[in-house]
Each structure stands twice: as C-alpha cells, then as structure tokens.
Image 1: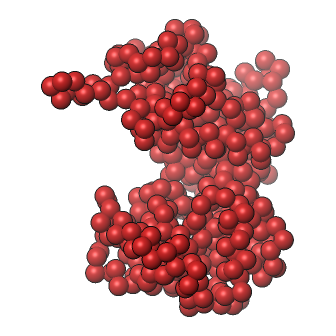
Image 2: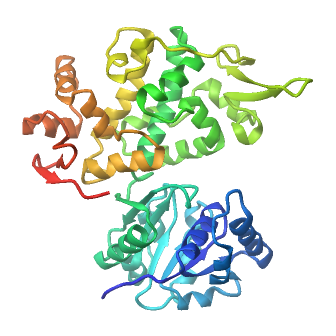
Image 3: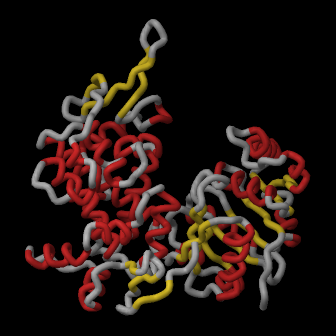
Length: 438
C-alpha cells in the first residue's frame, strides 16, 4: 500500500496540537481540530490566529481549519489521512482515546501520538493489530512553527510504508528535520538533554562546594560548550522544575536498570525543597533566577543562592581566556575544568553508549541535539573536537570501560566519528557510510 498524507485531524488543541494545526494549515492542508468542547476548540483557534507569534502566518488560510469536539465529531476523522493525537501526557487517557478512534478512521490512514517520552509499546499494548501496524510517535518540539526537530518513532509492528508516508510529509512538505529514533524512554533529544540537566543539578552543587559560583556554572555551560546562553540553571528555569520532576519520575520508571541516568532521576535535596515550595522557574516568577523591580521601576536580576537558600544580587562573570575553549577547559585541572568535564564530558560519554539503544547511528543523535536543543555540535561532533582517540586512551588508563561507540571507534582504528568534512560517518558496524543530506 502506498500511503499519502494530504489532510490532518488533530485531536487536542493545546500548545502542541495548536502548533501542528497552524503549521499544517499554513502548508495548505485541510485540518480538523477536535477538543473537549467548542469553547475550548475556539480558544485554540484564537491562539493559532492571534498568538504571539501566531501559529498560522497567513490568516486567509484559516478557512482550512474545521473545529469540532471529541465527543460529538470524532466520526469526522474518517475524512482525513493522518490522525494526530496531541492530548495530555497520560498513557491511559491516550489509550482510551485510541479505542474510540480505531473503529472510525478510514483504511489506509496513518495515526500518531505526540508524546515527549511515553513508550509507544505502552500506549499500544493490547490494541488491535490494525492500529499497531499504522501508528507511530511524531514527537514535535515546541514551538512547532519554529523548532526544526521532529522525532519519528515506529512501534514494533509499524509497517515501513507508514514511516515512509510520515517522512515524506513531515520532512519534504512540512520542512521538519526528521530524525529516526527508537521506542525507548524520552527517545533521543530528551534522553540526552534531560540527562545533561538532571545530572547537571547534582554535579553543579559539587562544583559550588569547591568554589564555582552559580553564575559561573551557567556561563561555562553556554558559549564555551556551544550551548544556548541560558546555561544550566537558566534552561531549567525556562522549562520549569515541575516539568523536570515529572521527567525524573518517568525516567525512574522506564530507564534500564544499569543506565547511568538512574543516579540522577531525583532532585538534590535543596532543589527538591524549591520544587515543594512552588519555586518552579519563570512560570512562577522565579526559580534559580528572578527579576526584581525597585521603586523606580528598574529591573535587576537576582540569584537564588543554593548554599544559603536565599536570594542575593546577581554577580556578572567574565571568564578567563583558557575557560572559553571547551577542549582546553575540559582538560584543565581546576574546579571549573573538573565541573566542565564531569557534566559535559559525562553527557558525551553517556550519548556514546546509547547506540544502538536509542538510534542506529551517530547522525540521528547529533541532529536531534542540534535541532532540538540548539547545540552547535551534536555529541559525536563534539567528541571529534576533543579527539576521541585521546579519550579512549584516557579511559583505558583509568581502567574504565569504553562506551559502545568509542569501542567501535577503537576497533575500527578510526580517529573520529566523521571524515571528509562530515560527508561520511562511522557506523556501528565499524564501516564508513555516506552521511544523509540534512
């Protein structure tokens, strides 16, 4: 069967669902948006048209969007090629919706769940074979209109033509950077990115005990590493401790027993107290940072000092020259260098041990982190800048086991994961392969 997507039914008009609706309508697709009731669906349409920024750039294309409710209009999905579920992140709620969807959709349609970390196998357990063959995870990053990354994950029974249809529509027509992931907890981007954040909270507190300030930690974890300017604490403030808490619980429930991330699924005690007190980040007016306005209306940034557990003025940081280059900083014996190696180096080694668990190749992992987390270099591109053969020797001299892809690199006698200016990459078979175009 040849599958083709020309129309989309989106179930759920929240932030993600609205973004998908607006993006598809902008492309000229006919879109059905169903939500719990008409007032909620109408509010979603208002966000699509009038949000800041709007999800739909061209208001003249609003006529392509049809509104309805999940209770009264679910049968209308029979007229659409792709049924995209984008409701609450709860496995039983999703399963219940799919039980109602399956008898109503037309033969040949494809179906997806938009989830940031729930394994597809849990959603599909006990579902009809017809659904299991036609379903995949389509994990968009928010905001859909802006973020390039889209993780595509098949289930154990998903047929190849379903994945081909999604790749064609999402990549060619929608313009997304599609990466192929596997049905494992948090997929690629969030698996590595959340390891970096959650381990970072623990490693940062150790560094602070050695005299590295919170502000320095965020500056080190930005431009010198090729990461966004938010750094560690600033990024968690943006996401929210409530979200990170749920991420930790999901990882604790689903990570393999021997996974290095298990050491970091819970917050350090001081961060747990912040969470319990409702000091969650920007959404609550402050987390690790906050903006303070004085009587004259001037705004200054304050830092929540994790040692004193109280607010203090922000102290701007100017890095010394040797701290500005990752390949120098991470191999310098200093509290700052040790922190940079423990966090960034630890994350790179973690990523190097996840092939083929979360992806069959280094390319999909690198692209997921560049497109989804705005890293200038993906983990394996970053490792290449550090001379991975040098890391192999260092780990072996300390008697530490080599992560899977570093073992492949050593056995292949290779000096890097990419060669010929990135035109070829080292596969897990130890052979060189042509890098797919972006």
